[in-house]
Amino acid sequence: MDRSIARAGAWAGVVALIGIFGSHLALMAIAGQRVSGTTDPAQITAYYGHPAIALLSVGEFLVLIPFAVFMVALRESVSTTPWTRFLATIGLVAATVEFSVILTEIAAQAALVATAQSGGDVVGLFRFWDALYNSGAYALEATWVAAFGLAMRHLSAFSGWLPRFSFVTAALLAINVSAIWVGIPRRRDAAVGALPGDLVRRGQFRTLSNGDRASAGRQPGSSIVGPR
Figure 1: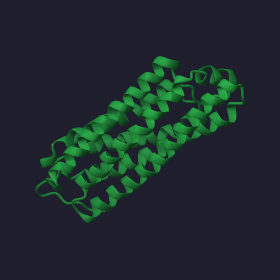
Figure 2: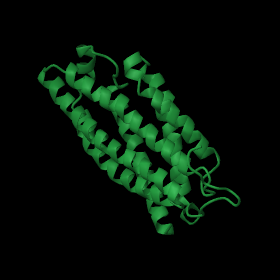
Figure 3: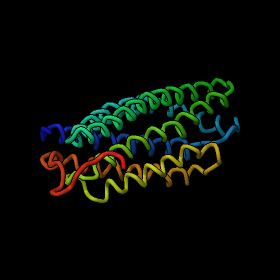
Figure 4: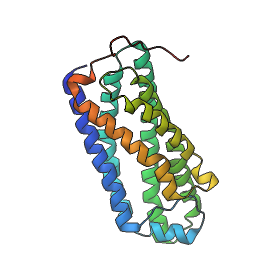
């Protein structure tokens, strides 16, 4: 892989990560802890009654651009054999579908602000947003984290801990799919999947930043095989 592709992907990933963290911190500063798993209209309206939440949607839309660049570069970096390319393509497809989900949930978030400010019924729309963002999106994220983790197993460019941690993170993200349905508290929900997921992304960004190593291929004596 061209070294410049890896470098471009790494920088795009850093920009995306800063944007993601910045968005979450801004939301916390404006409205406090996000509501989830509730059908209490008063609680939902109190949170989405802040007009600045809708304004943040612009930044959240833009963050998807560098993140898409990062995902394509990551696919290129691990596609050293037909099998790793197959796995990386699964990961890229899952990430692409997740982008569509995120676009929809951002728009729904802006609609929730408008509904809360106009005094409309927020419960149905909020449940749609909650199921999409705090359940469905986790299934897609678990898929691409696991797929890229499998593809990285025998690539010397990636730290040995990263593929293993990817599998653990994917399992935790999969657990989060059920969070709003079984009543896992929001703070615990974040600890179970979101924080490990951020660590995985940081590890991927860090590896891609060494563009000359990211195309190093397989470790001596190792082999890449399909499912056993």
